[in-house]
Length: 83
Image (tube, rainbow, N blue to C red; front, top):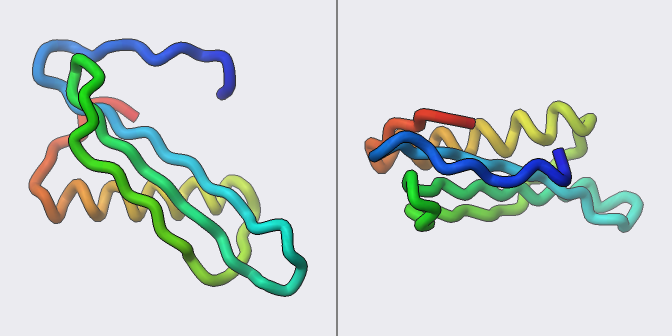
């Protein structure tokens, strides 16, 4: 979704953005996932990046990143209003 600008949320809302990347070394099977949760004015509340073993299709990688981001938000008792 490149080229789509970030839009602010309603007052007191939280938005989660995720991304995933594959290391371009054959046989490593390492995927990096990243998540950021922002307050309605754009301030970062939570940022997470981590390596994940294995290799997935691009849609599965994004889902994996989303899972890790929502899991972290749940641990911090944050309610996400927009993805």
